[in-house]
Length: 84
Image 1 (cartoon, rainbow, N blue to C red):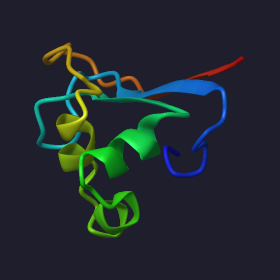
Image 2: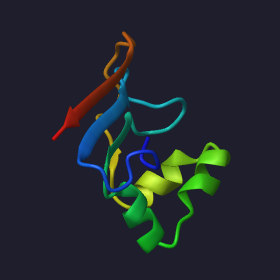
Image 3: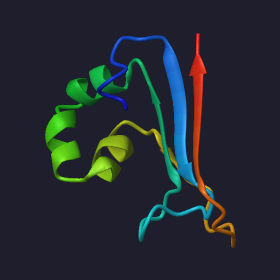
Image 4: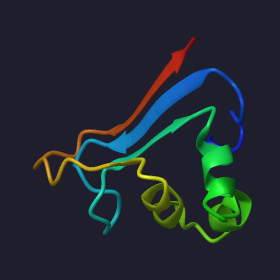
């Protein structure tokens, strides 16, 4: 999503309700129209990381991980998108 909304005025939270994403320690990440630019500024190739299924490295590097810790429930995945 971060690559698709590059330079657009959108913000999103993509997260899992159980508080962890797979075996990771974060629930997901925040993305907006500046995410791809900030990845490039950090020297990261967003497309390459996506191809490697490594979003953790990308969002950790730019400080956009969403971390709540385990919630004890696994109801669903959450996608909240704000269009401005």
